[in-house]
Length: 277
Image (cartoon, rainbow, N blue to C red; front, side):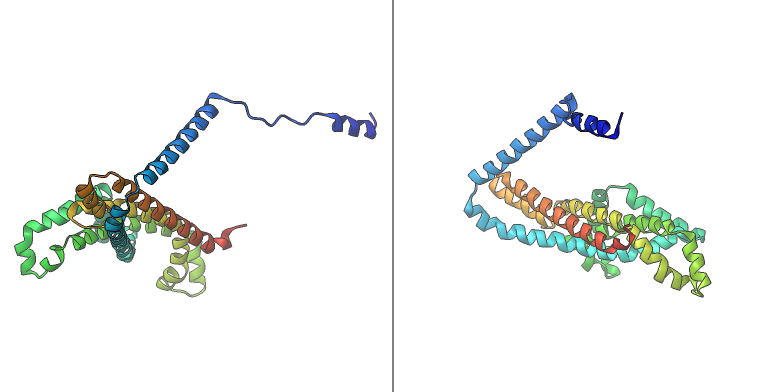
């Protein structure tokens, strides 16, 4: 066959059929997507038809106030927890059995028990020792529900962040330590200038997940009379018996989480751009 004939034969071939067959799984997927779309449209229509400007004017500012309480509580607890997580992570990696076991016990307890139980133990448990706390001058702190929630959140997130940081530090190749030693850097300089920056880049995604989990988990503080977003939602519902309050609270949480995830993803892209090939 000549080259011209081969070219003509290739040109006359029919293109491959790229249409996907309608399998049972594909049909089920489209039906599920359609049902979610119908539910979303129905929810939007319901909120629009049941819109009450009087309730919005009365409880809208309180929802915004509760949202700021949530952001403040989670933000402060994450910052303090990050500071506390560094010595805990170093303790977990320490060759000293005392430091290592103490750090392990702390992480094991706070990661192995529910945050709600920790909050109740601090808020209600320490309240049973008010006389002793007054004697040592700590009752001024633990008598406030917001402070108890902050204390519980700090201890909980520090345990999780310590494990994230420990795993990230241990993921840095051993050759980085050896190379820094060859350049004349001591171990402290090596850790702060070479190991820790690389570990923080590795820990970016787990840190983002921890922030989101803390943000959504912060709703439990409403159970100890902290009027965060969920606390204001519970109060609005108790006075109106309108479950739209919980729908709007869910919308606020959803928007806040998605905004935070987009910001964190952008930060991750910027800080890891040198790793892309």
